[in-house]
Length: 180
Image 1 (cartoon, rainbow, N blue to C red):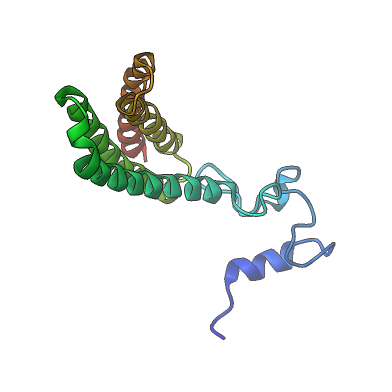
Image 2 (cartoon, rainbow, N blue to C red; image 1 turned 180 degrees about the horizontal axis):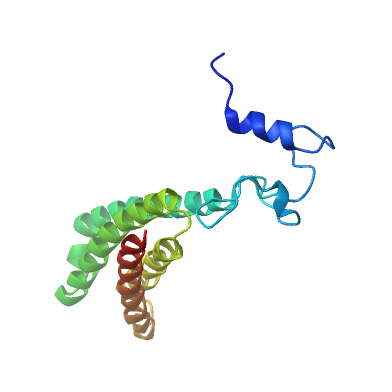
């Protein structure tokens, strides 16, 4: 065994001796005196409702969403190039390609925003940027895919909302990076 983890020793020494030794005896939210990582630049060490750090859960969801977006962009790009191109008119094919390209770029941006949000957990604009990019992928790319596969044209009206979410996401990311 290596040297003891100082945070674990401090937590063990300062925790009231109630309940199981690996569970907080008192809710961290109810008693700030037991939140050993408090302050504007710190993140709560334990959130009793999720069984772990809530921000880490959000990061996992966003990172997973970025990976799924990249996977789906790869699948849809391959399907479009090998099976869909011949059956779509040129304008719809161009829109489909644009949606695949935007999904690739913004999936990578979603993963980058998630990594920055983990690095700077106190920055709300950085954390918000990831959710805006995800909303943009769903609304912009999703509406173009849906209309390409035969959904009503009225669904295409969601694309500008998704495009706006993309723009706001990038602005929030830039603003958040400037503030840290």
